[in-house]
Length: 170
Image (cartoon, rainbow, N blue to C red; front, top):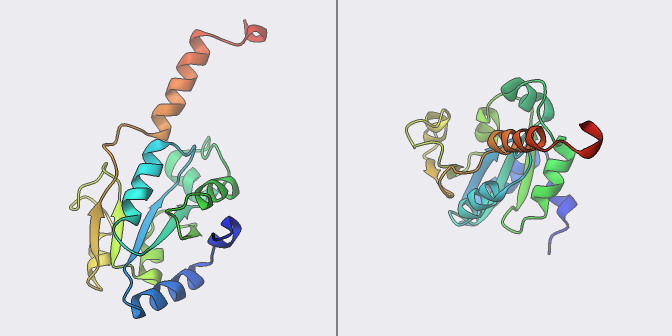
């Protein structure tokens, strides 16, 4: 079994691994997201993405990137902890963290044959689909229906705490 700590690699190393895998006839898949408060929807998405190829590289938004996309109160978990949680998933082969607001530059570096996105997208609505098509890659939608979201989970927690505050907060 791979040491979970060894799954986090630089963008350049991920690109080298992908090139070697393609050279060996293996299919490289790249999935991406913030993965804040890891939940079953994330796990199902990544497991389905891994089924699309032989090497799954997961690109994770950095803390700064998440804040830029989701606001100053996010992420809930820092990137080091999000990476650690993902590294323990058997379906995840390698992880790379990125600071940009989109995964476009990671895609250009890694050049996966498949860019896997969750079911909150369609192949036509994935912003990076044209980038992946530049080298003959394809965009695939996978995972279960988008019934799970960190934003929804946070709202549920807030609602429950408001309805039933801890004894010291009444």
